Length: 274
Image (cartoon, rainbow, N blue to C red; front, side, top):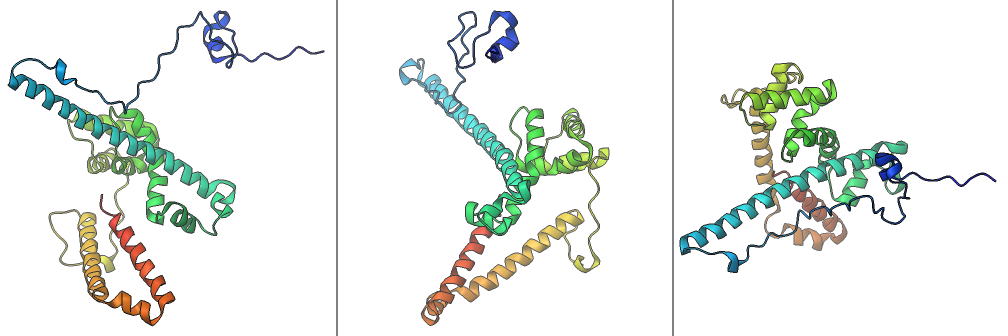
């Protein structure tokens, strides 16, 4: 009869003969108790009874508590957003790519899946998928949580040259005393040769009235946004008044379907605002 195999606990691996307890067994008295992880969402209450001094000093103490709360809230929100990008983007990539597309379990296409399951359009899903690996790398570099725009800017350097290139870009910016933004990451990455220059603008998309205070790519983006706004104004004018009720009265099923599509498109446009 062969002996029963013994699992080696993580503590035993770390401490050798000092700890051989099973992972699920009793606590080893030789080991110090692991402290509970602090709850980042636990409020830090300032007891009014503990605040003493003059009225000016007490006012300053309470104002300092509010400032600290605002700072904590901002950092916590940034961290939560960064975590969402990494976790959701990684999962969406797996759903899209593994086993020929796990989304096929419930939907015919990936676009249909993300729209129905997550109320997300294709552009947003691919933004998360692309940004996730760069966000994960930058989370190791930054003292605070990075933002998604920074990760997307660093993605070409990561894909083309690896983590070391991203670290070099961030170090170069900090050494120069520059703020780390999507724009400065792109500019420094290009200067260091880690991010390629933008593709030239096709002749058919060039216009004579591009704003001169911007780069060609930035100016083109502004022009396209202005064109989109003009088109939306025309659409809004066409849909005002009793257009929707009249369409529903004429053909309820078709009118309802069209109204839903308009509402869905409006919601997608609304999500464009950073």
